[in-house]
Length: 273
Image 1: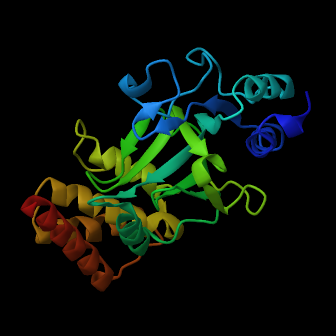
Image 2 (image 1 turned 180 degrees about the horizontal axis):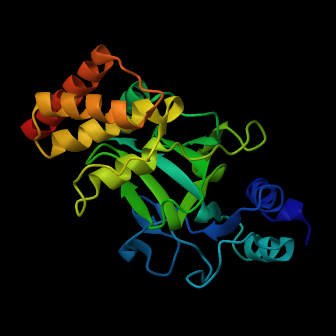
């Protein structure tokens, strides 16, 4: 049987992701009706259309062979394309549905920490976004909230993302158009800060260079505000920290004031909810 008779669009995309980009691609079930999965559980499935058709629990996050891909799509030609992230790949999952407006949260984060680098970006059917990054093991578990109930989560580890062209998904920036960017350092910093078991000062390096200073001071100020330190204490901490580990020191009182005020205002909004 040739590729043209085995769901050619999905299969060709799956092959490209596996062979050209080394991704752990696998076939996913799909919803045959709202809330009804194509698996044997049907309407009783807890994750309709979001789980693989193959046994994958012990499968490494390595690309499948061409023979495996052709066999899978020959058996299940209507399969969606899924990517097992593993420990080398992660994705920001930006939800946009109902009262959840992850795109607004992402815009706020980029205004604070700087625009995300060009990397693979896929549009979801609900109007959300998946932004992929290369990972060096900073984040190991499956799901991390960037900001509580914000609609923005970081997926990594044994998590599977549905990829274009499944369900009308499409690339905003495809793997053919941009290299996979490294995960910006402020994201794992925010994850450590929002960890409910570790609401404490973020560990800062011995020396803080200009390229990392702003997001480090912003994340540290946010962490202090979460612990309800007053504005004056946050401002003093930023000023003294800059003198000690800034390389070179920023020595900009107005910037430290803006960061401290932003952290206090953001926490006040969170407390009011």
